[in-house]
Amino acid sequence: MNTGDTAFVLMATALVMLMTPGLALFYGGLVRSKNVLATMLQSFICLGVVSLLWVVAGYSLAFGPDRWGVIGGLDWAGLRSVGLEAGPYADSIPHLLFCAFQLMFAIITPALITGAFAERMKFSGFLCFTILWTLLVYFPVCHWVWGGGWIGGLGALDFAGGTVIHINSGAAALAAALVVGRRRGYRREPFQPHNLPLTVLGAGLLWFGWFGFNAGSALKADEVAVLAFFNTQVATGAAAVSWIVAEWIKIGRPTTLGAASGAVAGLVAVTPAAGFVGPLAAVWIGLLAGVLCYGAVLLKERLGYDDALDVVGIHGVGGLWGALATGLFASTAFNPAGADGLFHGNPKQFLVQAIGAVGAIVYSFALSWVLLKVTDKLTGLRVAGEEEVQGLDLTQHSETGYVL
Image 1 (cartoon, rainbow, N blue to C red):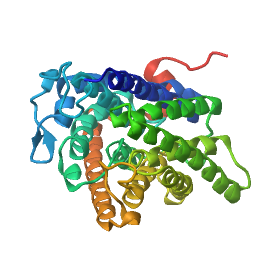
Image 2: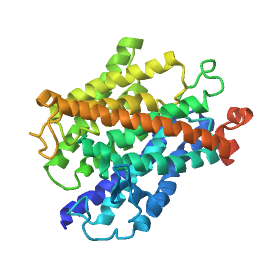
Image 3: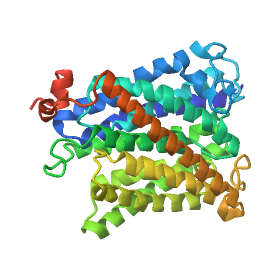
C-alpha cells in the first residue's frame, strides 16, 4: 500500500463528509424560517442512519461479490473481511478506507432527495422512506455502476457519481414531489428563501467538498486526480456564469441564488466526466449545464409540480447531461483507463451512457414511487395541514431556528 495515496483518500473522505452539512446549510437557507431546522435535520441525520445501514449490509450489497449483475452478496455483511489490507477496488489504500470513502457518497444521496419534499413531510415518514430507499434503490444502483453490475459491465463511465448519485436522486425527487403533493399555498403565497447568505455558505462548502468527491474518486494521488480536481473547478465556475447570464437575459437581472444554483449544477454535471475529459471539454459541460438546469427550473413552473428546492432541475437534469456529455467528450488521451466518446470517434460510448442513465431513471423513479406509497401506509407522509402552516420546526421537533 502507498501512504501518500492513503493520506490523500483520507482527506478526500473527510471533504465528502463535509458536503452533507454543507447541503443542510444550502437547503436550510432556501426554505421559510419556520422550517429551517427540520430541513437541515433531514440532511444531517443521514450521517447517522446511512452509516448504520452501510455497516450492517449496505457496503456488501453495493460492492460485495456480484450476484447476477444486479446486487452484491452478503459476504461482507457487518464488514466481515473488510480490513486494513488492500481491497479489490483499490490496491494502494486499505480496504476499510475505500469503504469509508464510498460511505460518504451513500450518505449524501438520500439527503439530496429531501429538497423535493421540503416543508411538508413528517419526520417519521422521512426516516422510513430514507431507510427503504437507501436499501432498495441506492445500494443496487451503486452496484450496477461501480460494484460489478450490469451498467458498469456495459462499459458506462461514471467517474464520481453522475448516475449513482445525481440521476438516481433526481428521479426519486420527481417521484417524491408528485406523490407527496404541493405545499399548502403553492402558487398562491410567496415562498421566498429566508436566508440566502446561509445558502451561499452551503454552496461554498459543497464546492469545497466536491474536490474530495471528484478528485478523490481517482483513489490515488496521481495525474487523474489532478485532472478531476481542475475540471471540477472550471466546470463549476462556467456553470455559475452561464446560469446568471441566462437569468439576466430572462428576467433582466442576475441573482445570488442563481449563481449558487449554477455552481451546484456545474458540480453535478462534471461529476461523471471529471476524470475522463480535458479541461476545455469540462468548460463546455459547465456552460451548458448552467443553461440547461436553469431552463429545467423554469419548466417546473409550467408543469406545475412542487419540487421545492429544485432537485429534479439541478441534480436530475444536471446528472443526465453530465452522463451524456461523458459519452460525447471522454478521451483516452486524458485517461487511458476510460474510453473515447462520440467526439473522439466512438459513438457507441454515447449510446452506452444513455442506456445506463435511462435504466437508472426508470428503476429509481418507479421503485421510489412504490416506496413512498408504502411509507404513506406505514407512517404517513405529510404533516397535518395546520402543522404545515405552523412550521415543521415547532410541530415536528419542538424547536425554533431563531430567537430574535
